[in-house]
Length: 501
Image (cartoon, rainbow, N blue to C red):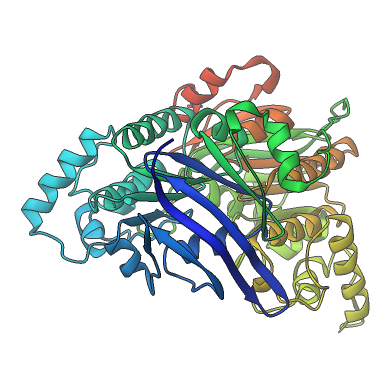
């Protein structure tokens, strides 16, 4: 048995109305890749924030290498050998790789010395980086390398990784796992948080499982199936996603030669994108973050207007119509960014329902907003999509990421769209919630809706899509029947192979 590196003993943290962590105890050994699993809202984020010094526990204690460990801030945690790669990157696009890394160091060396060190460390761990490149010009996978190398330059004893593969291609995942296994062999411990349970089984040797803020189990994930791990997380049998056989109907949504110049200094241009969508069809669009996904959704939803004929609904041109005008016709969308784009953070769920459902659900009469009907609609979304919240009076920012995602998707699905475009429908969502969201999309398609699912989760696209296309550098590949392409072919398409001219 390896020596204990970090021991957590009875950590408890409460907020008004909720106990995020309830007497959580476990240990991470030196040179171990340790998974932390749990549903959304199970307490994972609060726990790692305590380890990293972002949050102070109410009771309990931590020991690092046998000594009391009470970091008052992340700087104190880093000084004692704790590093963390967050799910959402904290990088400045207008600065170079070296400048971004220097900002994360307490006493960065001189520029030339730092650049040399970045070259050495990045190449040694199979994550090569050019220190002089602007971060704004990097792919999502390369940006993650910057975050990892910034941590490795601090020689960490424990590296915490939160959903590290959510922005990576299959080939990049393989490279990352090679790096993590090398770190493990050198004695570095890794605390790995992910909802991708097959990854956990392939990489980790121990898993601690949280449920409702409490530790409910510790196991060797290699001895469990992904389904068994998911059921341990939720404490119940997991429903299997089931797709009904659907006979595709007529073409209902058509995109023709849609192009868009970059909307910002580091934005992605869209180039001659074309596809057709039939009633009952789910088109899965895969791609690594930063290849034009946000821009594509903006054009399809009406946030960015294009030439009228570039977007057609039932052969009628709608490229010039605004989001509310498209919603009135049945074209609905759910963007990737939950807080701030899909939902107004400081508005409650009733108000957020009014914002997007007013037209489709007729929540206004003679110019007056019908708040009772809006509240009833929000309650319906909460009930049907198992949104864990006290009620429709809760503000959006008070929900966990996964529960807010369930609300956002449910709000759109229950408006009976003719066409639904969703970007990252299960981003950061636990297995049970992801299965529920995917099933709702399948059910919607079986009732005749046409759906575009933009996602970086290939397992998700393979599970629910009728057809597949890859978005690379703003170009969309030809669509292919999902049943006829292999995972290797998908990986090549994501890298730009088979792109439509």
